[in-house]
Length: 110
Length: 114
Image 1 (cartoon, rainbow over the protein chains, first blue to last red):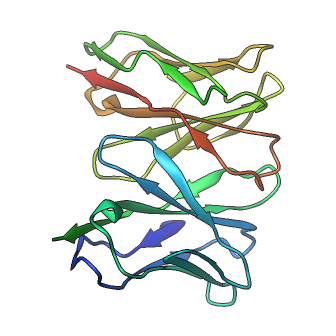
Image 2 (spheres, rainbow over the protein chains, first blue to last red):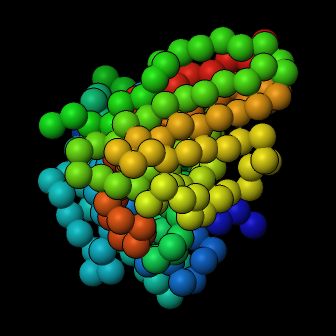
């Protein structure tokens, strides 16, 4: 089993749609969780950290379920500019490296 | 405030050759991690440098080696290149090695092995 798994995608949605991405991780001792966004042929950039209580940043909402080892990202009112690959990232804590999922590609269509 | 800078941006090598990639971390960051990203896949961890030492290593052969300098910049060396080494090599910097601090990536070095 891979350390971090994500919905395979791609997701093709119309502008204005709500879309949700799912991610599971295998290391129950994981401490930190993030969503990164990667545009085509560009570097990954931090979208948001994910906190145990869940957190929201504008149209983006992240949720963490430690018991189920599950992370989600919800995008509301999708924009054309949201088209990118979304990477789920998990860190095991002190002395551990960041593990990236394979990514889920989103295309928002006009 | 300069972000993470990498060089070269693109390079083409042939099988068996050696390559050196360079990275300067974001100002204030002291930890450098290297990732390999093949087309259509997520970044795969190669190794991390902190205080000029390799602190962690992913599942990569010894052909992959690195170094961190006193100014926190870093190099990634790959010997005896294989076709499968063709990928985007990403450098990421952070502060400290606790794992709690986010990674900031450079634009990457795209390596093609012919």
